[in-house]
Length: 221
Image (cartoon, rainbow, N blue to C red; front, side, top):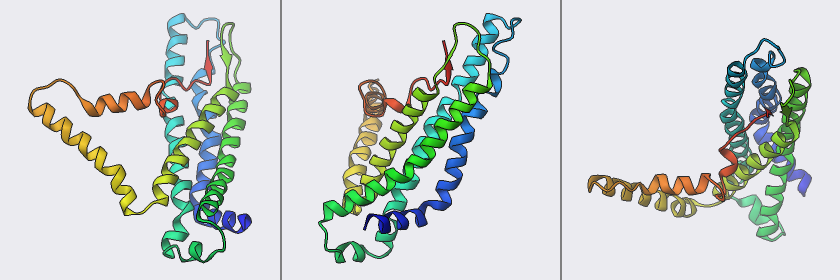
């Protein structure tokens, strides 16, 4: 049964997963194009800092690609079920939780492909440049962070996509409440921003989405 579910998931996601794999492989290589002169003895400390700053700016693209891959695979996991009104899932002689687990596992298997290619691209990028003393390449650590971010995004979007309109309401109502509270506090002249506070708690340690923020550095001191 898992093979059938995996094939179905692949058929719905291949048009997005293919370009995602190419982007995952190419992104680390593109990020070090500005680092090709790090070993130049004439490069000043300010120049080195500028190169590293330019590389750090690529971190947003690493995080965005991980989130996009998770979103694409999560929504495509349930595309055939939503299209058929979940008739196929309800007709199977398996428990609902087991079917959901198989759907989730198929997404994790497909997600492994861009993660592996991202790691290979990072290894190739690290090997293509000569680093001065004090600098190190971290291709495996970067790939592990990319894998964790992609898996987290897939898990979150998978949970949302698996639900009904009521489930979406459970998610959207608190967000709407935060926006309404922010509007009321702003109107009343209160400096506290609840939306920014919640986002800050979620995206900073020990928040669950901290992996998407911070430094995504292939090369660092």
